[in-house]
Image 1 (cartoon, rainbow, N blue to C red):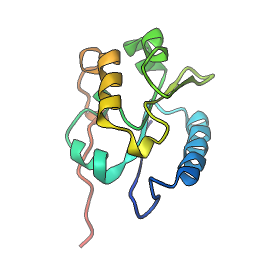
Image 2 (cartoon, rainbow, N blue to C red):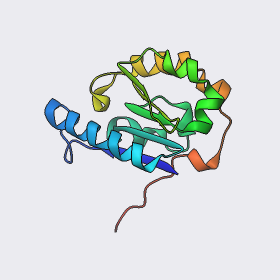
Image 3 (cartoon, helix red, strand yellow):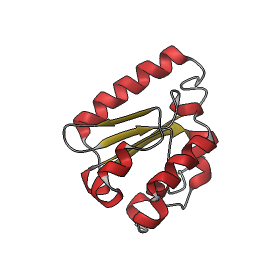
Image 4 (tube, rainbow, N blue to C red):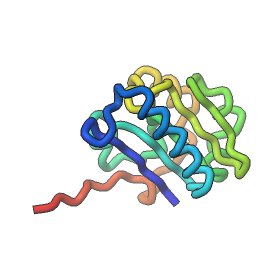
Length: 139
């Protein structure tokens, strides 16, 4: 299962720290229950929409959750030592990685540090399952 969770300014003002923290804790519980192979949380218009056609696993996001198979491919120790604000291991073997306190406003620099530390491009091959497809638009 692949889970994408993104927000826009209208749905969740990313500067409202209290709301953001409530949403993140709720999502952590949901991810723990769903146990996805891969999940990410980020600001849609600032970050997700520009990655259409990219293997999403090779990007660090405001929050990235790697399921057990990806943890094995990337390396558990490498993930647990990532330069991030929050790194947590789930009991089922997944790992939550969050570069900065507010995932919707995480800087490109903090995400690049994580990507470089993990070596995502070298460790993960292309897979259509993880490629962002253009969203359908209503007419």
